Length: 88
Image (cartoon, rainbow, N blue to C red; front, side, top):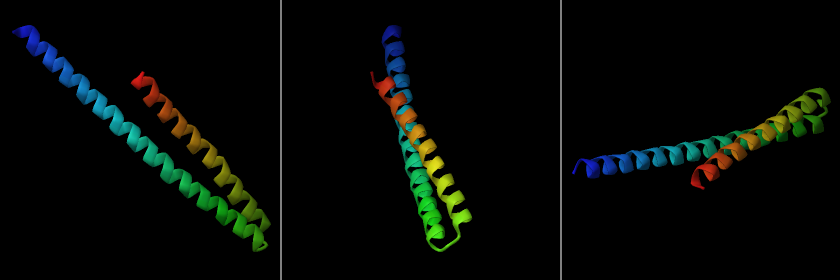
């Protein structure tokens, strides 16, 4: 009888852990999506500044946005890899 209780509680704990990992993976993906979108908009703003003749400001803004996009994509890939690793 005690073994069945332990087995059920272990199973419940494993399910809770699995649900938490999935929740964190979703949150990581959503955060990466929002930050990537923001960085893309910043890059477009930089390009707009270049077209308006503010080359220095536009170049700095576009470069910063593109660098941030690379970092956000890396974070998204890492979160996805962790989820895949957990799933296997």
